Image 1 (cartoon, rainbow, N blue to C red):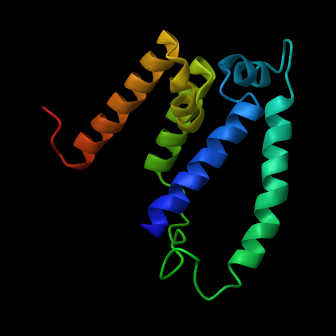
Image 2 (cartoon, rainbow, N blue to C red; image 1 turned 90 degrees about the horizontal axis):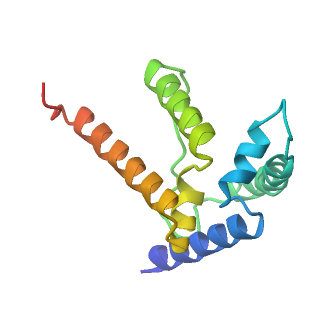
Length: 141
């Protein structure tokens, strides 16, 4: 129960941050990616602000013996760059550039019920499901 409550609080804070920084507006993201046109530095400022909080926080958090809401820390142990990582990052970047959304802001923007947002989220969920099928070897051949 405690983990679910903390996840809810973190999700609400994340969503509020996305709304306050206007990262739920795909025009902001596309404006950031348009380096040859009317470039919008807002996303860079949001990322820099997040990093300024995250890096020092990780140093303090990882000095603890265990997290507040779990028995142990779950840190990634995979360090190599392989083809699934490169392909996934490329698809993410292409989708981000074309749609102006990544998963967090897209889900947050669902409250607008904009047809573009709903279509993007449906396409994203379809992609998740297709990857699930590929990993389960359930793709129809």
